[in-house]
Image 1 (cartoon, rainbow, N blue to C red):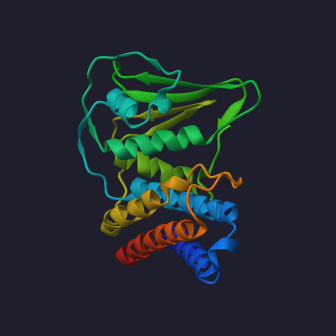
Image 2 (image 1 turned 120 degrees about the vertical axis):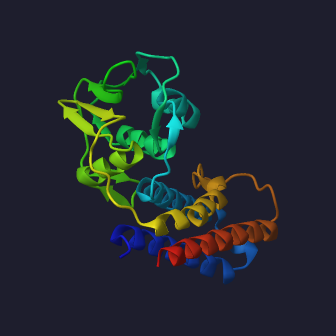
Image 3 (image 1 turned 60 degrees about the horizontal axis):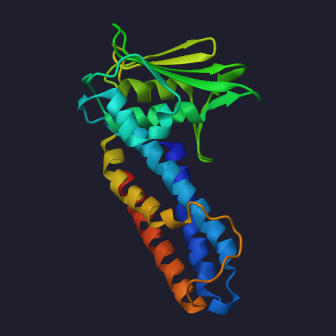
Length: 253
Protein backbone atom coordinates (compact mmCIF):
# COMPACT_ATOMS: atom_id res chain seq x y z
CA UNK A 1 0.00 0.00 0.00
CA UNK A 2 1.37 3.40 -1.00
CA UNK A 3 2.36 5.71 1.86
CA UNK A 4 -0.55 8.16 2.24
CA UNK A 5 1.71 11.19 2.77
CA UNK A 6 3.69 10.36 -0.35
CA UNK A 7 0.61 9.69 -2.47
CA UNK A 8 -0.93 12.99 -1.37
CA UNK A 9 2.29 14.92 -2.03
CA UNK A 10 2.78 13.54 -5.53
CA UNK A 11 -0.87 14.10 -6.40
CA UNK A 12 -0.59 17.69 -5.16
CA UNK A 13 2.55 18.32 -7.24
CA UNK A 14 0.93 16.89 -10.37
CA UNK A 15 -2.17 19.02 -9.79
CA UNK A 16 -0.03 22.14 -9.30
CA UNK A 17 1.91 21.57 -12.53
CA UNK A 18 -1.25 20.86 -14.52
CA UNK A 19 -2.80 24.07 -13.21
CA UNK A 20 0.29 26.05 -14.24
CA UNK A 21 0.18 24.57 -17.73
CA UNK A 22 -3.55 25.26 -18.01
CA UNK A 23 -2.93 28.92 -17.15
CA UNK A 24 -0.10 29.17 -19.68
CA UNK A 25 -2.18 27.56 -22.40
CA UNK A 26 -4.98 30.09 -22.26
CA UNK A 27 -3.06 33.36 -22.21
CA UNK A 28 -1.16 35.49 -24.70
CA UNK A 29 2.58 35.77 -23.95
CA UNK A 30 2.43 39.53 -23.41
CA UNK A 31 -0.20 39.09 -20.69
CA UNK A 32 1.70 36.52 -18.62
CA UNK A 33 2.64 37.47 -15.06
CA UNK A 34 6.13 35.96 -15.15
CA UNK A 35 6.94 37.08 -11.59
CA UNK A 36 3.93 35.16 -10.31
CA UNK A 37 4.79 32.23 -12.53
CA UNK A 38 8.30 32.20 -11.06
CA UNK A 39 6.81 31.75 -7.60
CA UNK A 40 4.52 28.96 -8.81
CA UNK A 41 7.45 27.03 -10.29
CA UNK A 42 9.55 27.71 -7.20
CA UNK A 43 6.81 26.13 -5.09
CA UNK A 44 6.68 23.19 -7.49
CA UNK A 45 10.46 22.76 -7.19
CA UNK A 46 10.33 22.84 -3.38
CA UNK A 47 7.58 20.21 -3.38
CA UNK A 48 9.41 18.00 -5.89
CA UNK A 49 12.62 18.26 -3.87
CA UNK A 50 10.81 17.40 -0.63
CA UNK A 51 9.27 14.37 -2.33
CA UNK A 52 12.67 13.32 -3.65
CA UNK A 53 14.19 13.54 -0.18
CA UNK A 54 11.30 11.65 1.41
CA UNK A 55 11.64 8.84 -1.11
CA UNK A 56 15.41 8.81 -0.63
CA UNK A 57 14.97 8.41 3.13
CA UNK A 58 12.48 5.54 2.77
CA UNK A 59 13.78 3.58 -0.23
CA UNK A 60 15.68 0.31 0.35
CA UNK A 61 19.21 1.09 1.51
CA UNK A 62 22.21 0.27 -0.66
CA UNK A 63 25.10 -0.63 1.61
CA UNK A 64 28.76 0.05 0.93
CA UNK A 65 31.85 1.01 2.91
CA UNK A 66 32.19 4.74 3.45
CA UNK A 67 34.03 7.29 5.60
CA UNK A 68 31.38 9.34 7.51
CA UNK A 69 33.42 12.53 7.81
CA UNK A 70 34.57 12.53 4.18
CA UNK A 71 31.03 11.72 3.07
CA UNK A 72 29.46 14.59 5.02
CA UNK A 73 32.06 17.01 3.68
CA UNK A 74 31.57 15.80 0.10
CA UNK A 75 27.78 15.81 0.09
CA UNK A 76 27.21 19.10 1.85
CA UNK A 77 29.93 21.09 3.58
CA UNK A 78 27.40 23.25 5.43
CA UNK A 79 26.27 20.21 7.41
CA UNK A 80 29.57 20.33 9.26
CA UNK A 81 29.87 24.10 9.51
CA UNK A 82 31.47 24.80 12.88
CA UNK A 83 31.67 21.11 13.71
CA UNK A 84 34.19 19.67 16.16
CA UNK A 85 35.73 16.47 14.81
CA UNK A 86 37.62 14.20 17.20
CA UNK A 87 39.13 12.02 14.53
CA UNK A 88 40.21 13.04 11.06
CA UNK A 89 41.86 9.87 9.83
CA UNK A 90 40.08 7.60 7.38
CA UNK A 91 37.36 5.59 9.09
CA UNK A 92 35.42 2.95 7.18
CA UNK A 93 31.88 2.04 8.18
CA UNK A 94 29.14 0.26 6.26
CA UNK A 95 25.89 2.00 5.39
CA UNK A 96 24.00 4.00 2.80
CA UNK A 97 25.95 7.25 2.65
CA UNK A 98 23.29 9.24 0.80
CA UNK A 99 20.59 8.30 3.30
CA UNK A 100 22.91 9.06 6.22
CA UNK A 101 23.49 12.58 4.87
CA UNK A 102 19.76 13.15 4.36
CA UNK A 103 19.11 12.13 7.98
CA UNK A 104 21.75 14.52 9.34
CA UNK A 105 20.36 17.31 7.16
CA UNK A 106 16.83 16.65 8.41
CA UNK A 107 17.88 16.82 12.06
CA UNK A 108 19.68 20.11 11.52
CA UNK A 109 16.64 21.55 9.77
CA UNK A 110 14.42 20.59 12.71
CA UNK A 111 16.48 22.02 15.56
CA UNK A 112 14.43 24.90 16.95
CA UNK A 113 16.53 27.54 18.74
CA UNK A 114 15.68 30.60 20.79
CA UNK A 115 17.35 33.90 20.02
CA UNK A 116 21.01 33.85 20.96
CA UNK A 117 21.30 30.06 20.90
CA UNK A 118 23.84 28.28 18.67
CA UNK A 119 23.84 24.85 17.08
CA UNK A 120 26.77 22.57 17.85
CA UNK A 121 27.87 19.57 15.81
CA UNK A 122 30.46 17.06 16.98
CA UNK A 123 31.66 13.99 15.10
CA UNK A 124 33.10 11.18 17.25
CA UNK A 125 34.83 8.51 15.21
CA UNK A 126 37.62 7.28 17.51
CA UNK A 127 35.38 5.85 20.22
CA UNK A 128 33.65 2.49 20.60
CA UNK A 129 30.43 4.24 19.61
CA UNK A 130 31.06 6.34 16.47
CA UNK A 131 28.38 8.99 16.27
CA UNK A 132 27.36 12.45 15.17
CA UNK A 133 26.09 14.64 18.01
CA UNK A 134 23.92 17.65 17.21
CA UNK A 135 23.00 19.96 20.08
CA UNK A 136 22.18 23.48 21.09
CA UNK A 137 24.19 25.91 23.19
CA UNK A 138 21.41 27.88 24.81
CA UNK A 139 17.71 27.17 24.62
CA UNK A 140 16.61 24.86 21.83
CA UNK A 141 15.11 21.49 21.00
CA UNK A 142 14.53 18.93 18.27
CA UNK A 143 11.06 19.46 16.85
CA UNK A 144 8.86 16.37 16.71
CA UNK A 145 7.44 15.36 14.32
CA UNK A 146 10.27 16.33 11.99
CA UNK A 147 9.16 18.53 9.10
CA UNK A 148 10.36 17.89 5.58
CA UNK A 149 9.31 20.84 3.46
CA UNK A 150 5.63 21.72 3.63
CA UNK A 151 4.48 18.23 2.68
CA UNK A 152 5.81 15.73 5.19
CA UNK A 153 5.94 15.19 8.93
CA UNK A 154 8.08 12.29 10.14
CA UNK A 155 7.38 10.87 13.58
CA UNK A 156 10.44 10.21 15.72
CA UNK A 157 9.77 6.49 15.33
CA UNK A 158 9.74 6.83 11.53
CA UNK A 159 12.95 8.85 11.60
CA UNK A 160 14.63 6.32 13.87
CA UNK A 161 13.75 3.69 11.27
CA UNK A 162 15.30 5.82 8.54
CA UNK A 163 18.51 6.17 10.56
CA UNK A 164 18.64 2.46 11.40
CA UNK A 165 18.25 1.60 7.70
CA UNK A 166 20.84 4.16 6.61
CA UNK A 167 23.46 2.98 9.12
CA UNK A 168 22.65 -0.73 9.11
CA UNK A 169 21.40 -0.78 12.68
CA UNK A 170 22.44 2.68 13.85
CA UNK A 171 20.37 4.16 16.66
CA UNK A 172 19.44 7.54 18.11
CA UNK A 173 19.83 8.87 21.65
CA UNK A 174 18.38 12.10 23.02
CA UNK A 175 20.00 13.65 26.07
CA UNK A 176 18.62 17.02 27.03
CA UNK A 177 19.34 19.34 24.12
CA UNK A 178 21.62 16.92 22.25
CA UNK A 179 20.68 14.32 19.64
CA UNK A 180 23.30 11.60 19.12
CA UNK A 181 23.13 9.72 15.83
CA UNK A 182 25.05 6.48 16.35
CA UNK A 183 26.64 5.22 13.16
CA UNK A 184 26.66 1.58 14.24
CA UNK A 185 24.36 -0.59 16.33
CA UNK A 186 21.77 -3.31 16.32
CA UNK A 187 18.56 -1.29 16.04
CA UNK A 188 15.82 -3.06 14.06
CA UNK A 189 15.85 -2.16 10.37
CA UNK A 190 12.38 -1.62 8.89
CA UNK A 191 11.36 -3.33 5.69
CA UNK A 192 11.33 -1.05 2.66
CA UNK A 193 9.25 -1.02 -0.51
CA UNK A 194 11.22 -1.66 -3.71
CA UNK A 195 8.82 0.62 -5.60
CA UNK A 196 10.42 3.60 -3.87
CA UNK A 197 13.78 2.79 -5.44
CA UNK A 198 12.12 2.74 -8.86
CA UNK A 199 10.55 6.16 -8.26
CA UNK A 200 13.82 7.88 -7.31
CA UNK A 201 15.02 8.51 -10.86
CA UNK A 202 11.90 10.23 -12.27
CA UNK A 203 11.23 12.39 -9.18
CA UNK A 204 14.89 13.45 -9.15
CA UNK A 205 14.56 14.47 -12.79
CA UNK A 206 11.39 16.44 -12.01
CA UNK A 207 13.20 18.37 -9.28
CA UNK A 208 16.20 19.05 -11.52
CA UNK A 209 13.92 20.30 -14.31
CA UNK A 210 12.59 22.96 -11.93
CA UNK A 211 15.91 23.76 -10.26
CA UNK A 212 16.30 27.08 -12.10
CA UNK A 213 13.37 28.46 -10.07
CA UNK A 214 14.79 27.49 -6.66
CA UNK A 215 15.80 31.06 -5.86
CA UNK A 216 12.85 32.84 -7.47
CA UNK A 217 11.66 35.86 -5.46
CA UNK A 218 8.60 36.93 -7.44
CA UNK A 219 10.25 40.26 -8.22
CA UNK A 220 10.03 41.67 -11.72
CA UNK A 221 13.43 41.41 -13.38
CA UNK A 222 14.77 42.64 -16.74
CA UNK A 223 13.62 40.27 -19.46
CA UNK A 224 16.36 38.09 -20.95
CA UNK A 225 14.12 36.84 -23.74
CA UNK A 226 10.94 37.79 -25.53
CA UNK A 227 7.57 37.00 -23.96
CA UNK A 228 7.02 34.30 -26.60
CA UNK A 229 10.39 32.67 -25.89
CA UNK A 230 9.81 32.88 -22.13
CA UNK A 231 6.39 31.26 -22.42
CA UNK A 232 7.92 28.42 -24.41
CA UNK A 233 10.69 27.94 -21.81
CA UNK A 234 8.27 27.92 -18.86
CA UNK A 235 5.86 25.59 -20.66
CA UNK A 236 8.56 23.08 -21.56
CA UNK A 237 9.91 23.06 -17.99
CA UNK A 238 6.47 22.49 -16.50
CA UNK A 239 5.57 19.82 -19.09
CA UNK A 240 8.81 17.95 -18.49
CA UNK A 241 8.48 18.12 -14.68
CA UNK A 242 4.86 16.94 -14.94
CA UNK A 243 5.85 13.99 -17.11
CA UNK A 244 8.51 12.90 -14.61
CA UNK A 245 6.18 13.38 -11.62
CA UNK A 246 3.49 11.26 -13.29
CA UNK A 247 6.09 8.59 -14.05
CA UNK A 248 7.19 8.57 -10.41
CA UNK A 249 3.59 8.08 -9.27
CA UNK A 250 3.05 5.32 -11.84
CA UNK A 251 6.13 3.48 -10.58
CA UNK A 252 4.72 3.58 -7.07
CA UNK A 253 1.36 2.08 -8.00
